[in-house]
Image 1 (cartoon, rainbow, N blue to C red):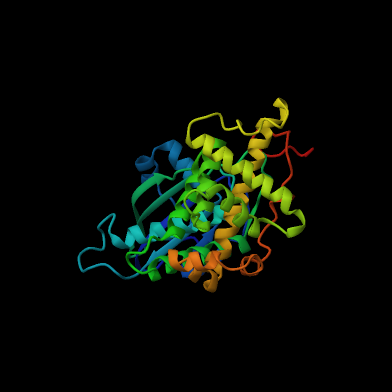
Image 2: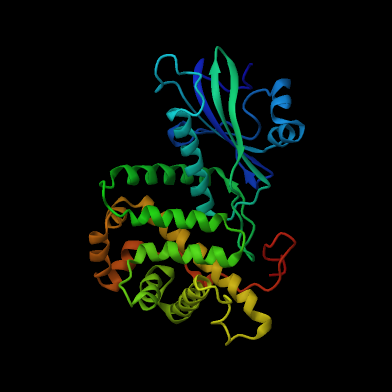
Length: 348
């Protein structure tokens, strides 16, 4: 099997993440951190036996994907174990691509129809696929704006994935790893379909960052998140948004109607407000985790509870300087008209 302009190593294991109908404007053939390579079509010819193995429909869906992330390795297996499926090397390659994809979702609302993952090996110029599966889909929050992936986004996502992996490796054994648990909650939020479940996960991800004291969670959630949610000039509006989002999260947790705390709004507005608050928490959590992972000094402060507690004992100005101007949730518009896909209508 000859590669299509891609110099496959003679003997290697590989993993591929393929996205179908994704919004992307990326030049094919670029190489990211950790030798993750990017293509706009399948990186090698799909021979007829793939159709029999995958089935005609899946074969066509895979072939028609328009964004491929590929990672390979030429070492790491024991003698005689090269063709073993699901080994440590294959799992690591898949994990690296999956982490990068999650970080890419943290940078914007990815829209796509399917995401496939597969892995296998190349021996003497012939590629053999050993495992094929679909991934848990990332969804969008109703009212978001369209987003197109570019090369800069891919490079930043790869940088974030590497930073997260390094943070996990360097965190001492036995620590709570609040940041890792918060990252997981954020990923869960991206995967949930219903906005109420998404809001619950996004607020939980933010709670992981603020280390609230028992009995003071709501007050500290509002006060501490406000320090990186926007400028002081719009503090009142930001705190109100945070307070409403937190109370909505509590109602969701206790299986109440999630708009129960929004009675001040007219009945025709309440549902749109719930989506608005969900988008704001999504943007805020995404911006905060992006900043922390890319700033080693800030990440160090989030590496264990004692350091995090000391961080939040600092002055408001110190916390604001540490985060910088990462976002302004007051700038996310209140949306009441949506297109067929749930995005904000062009008229908005």
